[in-house]
Image (cartoon, rainbow, N blue to C red; front, side, top):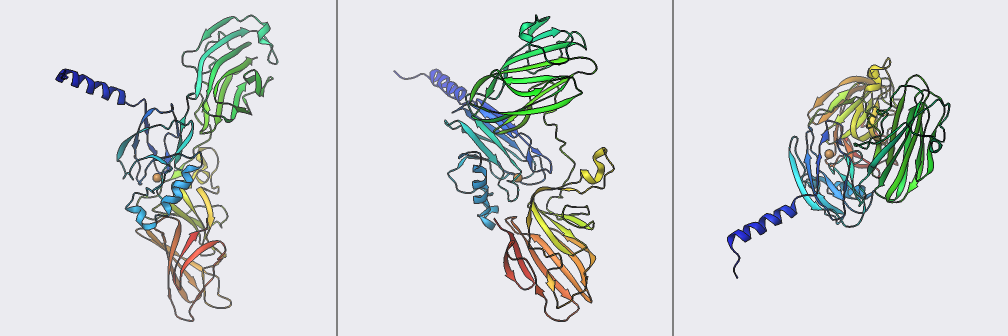
Length: 464
Ligand code: CU1
């Protein structure tokens, strides 16, 4: 029998229906911070996943999902760096059997949806941007687990009474009980503002085996138990106070219990947890997703070197931060007329200097990333002979991707041009000297960096 066109159309419709993604995730970029705006999501083993990556940033980014465990992102990012200058043409996508799925390198304001099947093996699958210099910061995790992380079936028992520490609630008669539909721990069901208590109980899904941290922030006392064991003890009469505890948990559902009491005055209860593949997340309503101040980041200007005069760690008060396209930044000290160190990442957090609305400011700014040494001796790199006079800084000039530092050493004017290596793993220096005299020698701590080239043009690369 021949299938009628109608049957074929129906079959096609069914195929399309089953191919619809079971997990749809939108991931964006936090502007100028080299961060994805979503750093964790769950997928069931073998689930059909669709990730829509929206690059609403001024820099290029990609998103590569890796297999091979939590640290696999580094292997893939290093393989991308090894592409060297060819990386630009390949969108920094290396050939690697550790890659589960990948977007192309997206230009600013592009987006792309990738579809793939989540691996059958449960565990953590990191995703990362392999644009040179981004991977240290720009990454997240797909957790493949039959137990999507979170709290479910949350119920409360509400009590009234006067206590100075947590009572044995099991011996007391609750004044009210109920179910909390959104599964967020909350004091909302209370019927008065003093002399009351709660016991919250729910089922907590733990996605993978590992160490988990819990914390409560409460006024007054609280206690958190997992499977009947106390993990956080924050008991007693006190103002809002945080306490934390750690516990090893197996994958699966666990019983979470939070006890709380309020004597008089203000009342607060916030509960958080963190574990493999995710940072601090609230288990309570109204709590900030992450209480750490994100800071005020100075955005580098895309495609152009950026210089900001700010105080930086391990440098004099005359330091400046220079951000280069490609995500490499360095600290230039106008006192020593030398590059003190470099870092890959998100340039500088200037909130300590601005006071962040809280203090007086004027503090030392934070570099966003991890410093690496560049062979600095605390003096200019060029030596003209014994007893060179102290250098005098004479300003800088931005020239597209590069910055040119000007300084005087005695009667000689030195121009030091600095630009990023194509792979973003080092700095290229080009010196020009006016004022004559003997040929200068280069003095650099060669054990700290890989030095390539010679004379007045050379490259210092990060030692891995
Ligand atoms: Cu990136």
